[in-house]
Image (cartoon, rainbow, N blue to C red; front, side, top):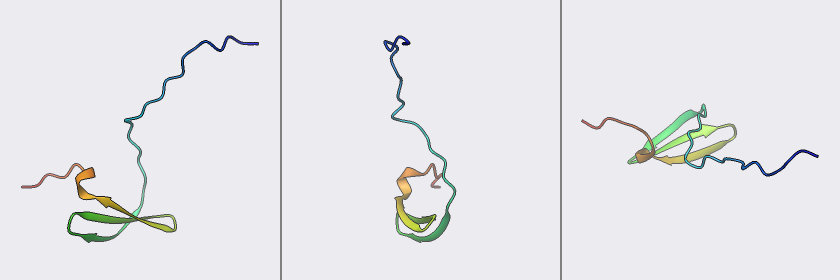
Length: 51
């Protein structure tokens, strides 16, 4: 049996890329449809230049 003493590394602060359709934008919330679900995402999660 192989030696199981190797530490497994898990990255918690990683980036995930998902493709979705923007359904609506209300104030500071963007509603994105991914598959059959519409997910509200705070606009602060995006790297948006506010001028």
